[in-house]
Amino acid sequence: MRDLKFIALGMAAALSFVSCNRNIYGNYPSGYPIFYNFLQVDGDQTRIGINGPAAVAGIPMPKDESMIVLHGEPIASFKDAKGREQRNLGRTDTIVEVTGLVPKKDREARLHFRLVALSLAGSVTDVGGQEWKVKVSLSEKREQPQSIAVVRNNSYSNAVGQGEGTFDSELLLLPRFVFTSGGEERIVDEPERLGVKFIATDAQWSSIPPRGAVRPELNGRFFALKAVHGGEAGQHATKAATVGTESF
Image 1 (cartoon, helix red, strand yellow):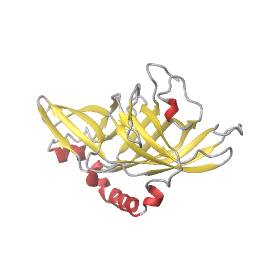
Image 2 (cartoon, rainbow, N blue to C red):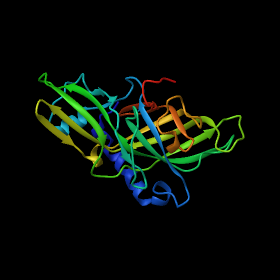
Image 3 (cartoon, rainbow, N blue to C red):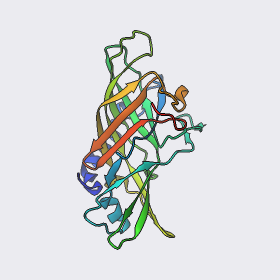
Image 4 (cartoon, rainbow, N blue to C red):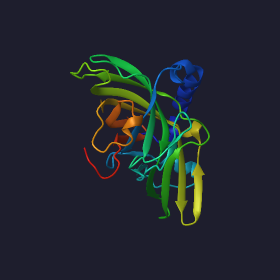
């Protein structure tokens, strides 16, 4: 898997395409619903290349520690598309804004995804044996770009708003890294250099909320149950977030 610092050219091209096609990748016309998927890291499968961000931070890393395993840290609140602060997010560590309409039975549709909140953490040890705590969130210098998901409804039900099936998607991430060790803090927020595109295939979704689902009234009947977004820079494995310790 390539280090994050080598993703820059491809990501820059993708961001340029996004900015030049706002009608396709940007805000939908008025009337299209905006809703939210509340997700949490699934096990220890989320990991990304750390050498690039560490190099920008001036932290020399050993060759055998090129990846960092990340776990989720719950998000207390976020502001929705109307500027309202939403709380009671349970174990959510990743929030995806979803725009569009869920397809009818035996159909597929394109929805637009955009990361609006991310709270992940892990730790690494540099070549001198010093441990650094690492927090990964969203860039504060640039808004997260829109991504596309192709959603298929394979349900047996003809009821409006009911369905289940799979989806393929891209998840574009412009990350912000905070390295801390002792009383020292080093922040890396370089969206043009460290942008990542993750791709998921045959991820699972359902219109029925899983047990203990977070804020189902904000979900728009599209629950991303399980997905592994992977790429050369690592992967981000998620499941639908729960309000407590419930499993599904």
